[in-house]
Length: 439
Ligand SMILES: CSC[C@H]1O[C@@H](n2cnc3c(O)ncnc32)[C@H](O)[C@@H]1O
Ligand SMILES: [Zn+2]
Image 1 (cartoon, rainbow, N blue to C red):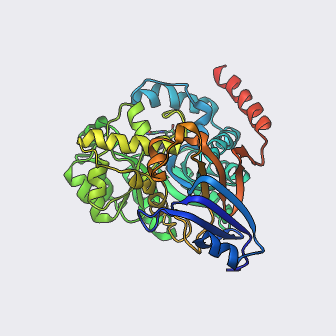
Image 2 (image 1 turned 60 degrees about the vertical axis):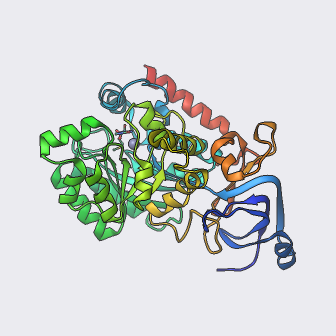
């Protein structure tokens, strides 16, 4: 690594997330190109690196960019089209028919540009996405300058994207090949859910994921109906069926994981699986409350996701942290469940861990990539501030984000987007889609 310092970011507070529980005052993050060179007391950084540019964030907290561990970015074009429905009616009566009529590579590219703009403005620097046309989504994330992990989705029925599971895998692997050397784009295998993918296809996913060394990203145990249907159709709970087919392992990201009994939790812990907790989506679709406190106490890695904007209806990791913390307290009747520093770790380092990326992102440590977010805590509604981590979860929101870096590149400056696609052009694109979707 080149050790020429380019930029000194001096902040009132720095929360590196690792080591856990540490908040540094009057420190500096030293950047060299796309990497973090050092984390030093302010005066020492100035002394050691007198030639570097300096950015003084005098009333801000600096922390690692959020890792959104589960999203369907392009669904932002369907924000608000189907509120107040439970999951299966939401999918079958509203979402799948709309997807059937409108989803195309252009839809995914434009919808993902919209989502990336929203996520970056809210401090999210990495998105673990799952949607049709991952190649088009990768294009959009690349253009926005975000880091993304795209799911090579697998569904066992025909969609506008593919004729079935084999076609999905062929297209997903081709997309992965095209993006193989890109520094900010990665891939997972993403079977949609146990109830939409056959045993044969799931087995193929398990062996392929081991062969090409990518994570498996799948919705699991989202509703009580999913468990009941699986027992009727397969004679087992969904996770037990996936275990029989060889899917759970350290590379397994189970999304939602709401309806878990003791054997399910044992299984997740035994195989070293991760869970993507989506508290807002789980509340909005009335799916239930995931037993996050119990999962964390069993040592299971739990990250946070927004799900898509059609079931949330925002892509806002501040909201997810707050909902995760509050839901855990109300579910356990224990006010100590999911304290603020745990919620922040779930939204950053735990997401990176689920994706196998802790060597690169998720915390502010020398050698890691400079994916960073600054939040201003100097406004009347954020003062006084005794603990900036408590404020990030309980007080601040995405409206307080001022600066966001991805790979050391400034993407949001003084709350203004520096995106490749101008705000005006993006709004024009979205207006065209809105008209199409209602006709
Ligand atoms: C295979 S692409 C993604 C597919 O999943 C649908 N979807 C979005 N949110 C959820 C959810 O919470 N549970 C299950 N399926 C979901 C989306 O509409 C696409 O069809
Ligand atoms: Zn989802």
